[in-house]
Image 1 (tube, rainbow over the protein chains, first blue to last red):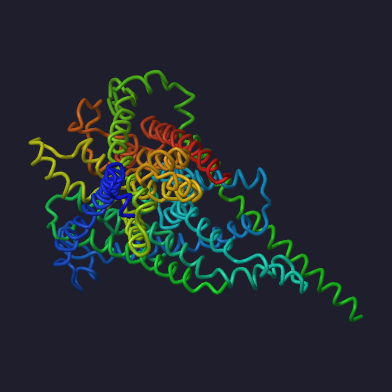
Image 2 (cartoon, rainbow over the protein chains, first blue to last red; image 1 turned 90 degrees about the horizontal axis):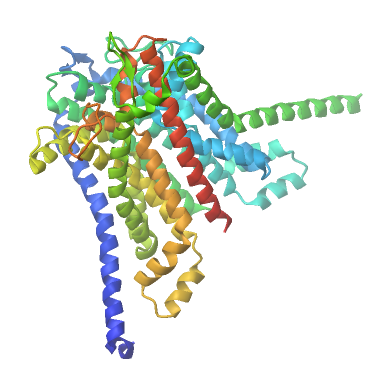
Length: 291
Length: 302
C-alpha cells in the first residue's frame, strides 16, 4: 500500500476522495442542521406554555388566552374516524395486490392510481372533499366529511407498508397451508396476516401521523376556527391542532407568541412521537425476523 | 344425511369465501375508483364555468386576477402560475443538489449506524406537518430574510422556496438512495478494480447508471413542491403578481384556492374558477407523477 501511496497520482486521488466525502457529508449536515435548530427553537419557546391548564382548557378571550383542549379532542376525532375508514380498505387493498392480483394491466393501473393518489396536492383533495362529501353526499362540513377526505388522502400510506409486510412473508408459509387443504382466504386469515401484523401496524401508525398533521384537506370540509363545545358526533364540526396553529399564527391578532409556539410544539411533538414509534417498531421487526 | 349436511356446509363456506374475495377485490381497485372520483368531482364543480364562458386564453395568459371585481371580473391565472413556478424552481435549485448529495452520502459514503441514523432523521424530517413549516416560515425565516436582505417583508419567494426545499428533500433522498442501491455492486467493484476513487465511481459510474431513478427522485420532489399548500400559503405573502426577484411576494395556485375558497358562495363563478385551478393542479401533478413512475419502473426492471 505504501508503495502506491508514494505516487503522485495516488495521493491526488486520495485527496479528491476525501474532498468528495466531505462535500457530501457537508451537504447532509447542512440539511439536517437547520431542522435541528428549528425544532430546538420550537421546544425552547414552546415549552414554557405547556401546562395542564394550556392542554386541558378551551381557548378564551378571542383565542388570546386559555388552552387548546378542543383542538386536541378534534384532532383525535379526525384521526380516529379516518383511521377506521382507511385501515380496513387499505389493508384489504394490499391483500388484493399481494395475494390475489396477477402481474398484468389491472395491477399496473391500480399501482398507478395509488402513486397518483399519493401525489395529488392536498388542496385538490380538499376540493374533492367539498365536491363529493360536503355537497354531493350532503354530509355538510362535518367530522365525517373531513375524515373521509383524510382517509382517501392517506390510503396510499397504509397500502404501501401493508404490501411490504405481506410480501415479506415467505412463500413456503402459504404453500404449506394450501397443502393441508386450506383455501386462499383461510391461508391469508390464519397465516399471512398474523405473520405481518407488526408491519401493518407501522403503516397504520404512519397514517395516524399524516392525518394528524394535515391542514388543507380539513380547511373546508369539517374543521372550524373556533367552537365553544366539544363535538358530540361525526356530524359536528370540530377544531383541530393543525388548523388551530394556522388560525393562531395568521388569522387572530394579539395572540401571545408563547401560545402559538406551544400549539406548534404540541402538534410537532404528537406527529414526531407517532412517527418515531412506527420507526422503532419497524426496526425491531427487521431485527427479530425469524425467517 | 350427514353427508348432505357437510355438503351444504361446504357450500356455505365456499359462498362465504367468494364474498370475502369480492370484498378484497373491491378494496383492491378502490384506489382507481378514488382517483376517478377525484377527477369527476373536481371537474363537476369546475365544468359549468370551464365549458360555459371561461376565456381559456385569458385564464392561462393574463396576470389579471380580479375574481371579486364588481364591474369587470377577470380570471387570469398567469400570476398564480408564475407564483407556483417561481417558488418551485427556486426550491428545486436548493433541494436538488442537497437532496441528491445527501442521497449519495447516505448510499455510498456512510455505513452501519450512521447510515441508519441518517435515514431515521430524514424520515422524521418528512413527518413535519406543512402547517408547522409555514409557522417556521412566519416566525423564523421571515425575520432572518428581513435582516439579511434589508427588505420590509420576509414573506416571499425565497422564504417559500427554502421551506419547500426542506420539505421535498426527504422524498428525493429516499427515492435517490433506492436508485443508487439498485445499481449492482459489480459496477462499483469493476470501477474500483481499475483504480477509480470513490468520487470517480460515483461521478462516472453510479450517476449515469442510476440516472432514471434520480430523475424520478427529482420529479417526485417537484410534485411535492407544486402541490404543497399550507407552507406557501403562510410564507410567501399574498401578492398576486408575476415576481421579478426572489424577494418579491407571490401567491401560488394552491395558496389561492386555500385562501379564497372559504369566502366564495357555492356555485358562483369565483367558486368554480378555484375548482378550475384545482383541475389544472391535478393535471400537472398527474403528469409529473406519471413520468416519475415510468422512470422508476425502468430502474426496477433492471
